[in-house]
Amino acid sequence: MVTPTSTSLAHTCTRCLRSRTPQFSRQLYLPSIANYRQFSVLHRPPPNYPGHVPLKLPERLFLAAGSAIMSFIDPRRGDLIALLGETTAQPYFIYRLRDAMLKHPTGRRILRDRPRITSQSLSLPYLRSLPANTIGATYVSWLDREGVSPDTRSEVRYIDDAECAYVMQRYRECHDFYHAITGLPIVREGEIALKVFEYANTGLPMTGLSAFSTLTVKKDERDRLLGVYFPWAIRNGWKAESLLNVYWEEVLEKDVQEMRDQLGIEVPPDLRKIRAEIRRKRREGKAGKVKTVATTTGNEVAEEARVDTEAEREEREQREIERQAMEILEQADKM
Image 1: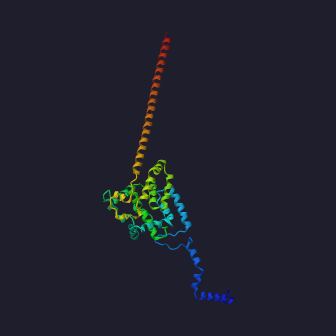
Image 2: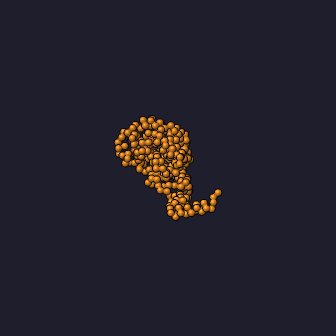
Image 3: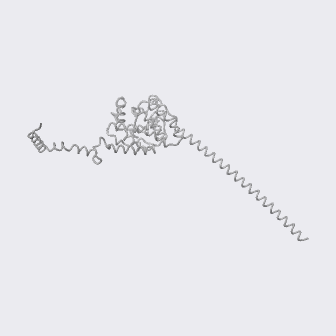
């Protein structure tokens, strides 16, 4: 039982402590306010690395939903896909990828060195001088054919852990190597197929959500994706080695087919050739239709010309009959 004396003593000690140590008072009563200010929109915690933007959970959900909808409409929007990837990778998936890299000797070296893939770090002129069967030449020829550059990848901003942010940046910058080694072009159909391959290989939610963009393509493209490229993507992405553990900068001179065999990747049917063949057949079909229409039109013109000729002949014959009738009438008048 607390006596009045002990209670007053406790109040006295507390008042003395507050008066002698003002910092104690602030630490005792203000932490909750400070924590509240850290999680408010106007008072964010400091960034964990240059360019980092800490997000509250509602903000993260809003950005994820918005980028998912817009990426569904156009899966070629790299900026929206990047935003979707960052906002959905936390709190589990990106850490899982980081841990997988830490368990692999090459992955650990990549995380330690943190190399960046740019046009300067790779020296594109040097890659163009390599033999055509090398990874470097395959990569740069794919860049030239598609008209893209490795310098267009945006910086990671919304992943809180600095090391995990680099893992996402590495995945983003290696994306063109995945295109090159599989041969899939930058068209809606090719991007969707590669995203399914990446989902089976990395498990990132954004890559799996991109599969829903199948609903936005034409029927023949959707049939090819469901019948050919999705089975290929799931089978190869699942059985292949983790592509994030490939130190691409060190294998540029390696034979590309040897690298595919080492990773366990089969080359899918050439989508660019398939699309080109379909376009050629469509052009031939349209040309045949135009020729048929032209022939039909020519026949109609010839028929009209023939009708006009017969009408003129009939008119001449009618005039000749009328002339002969007038001559007969004139002779009758003379008699």
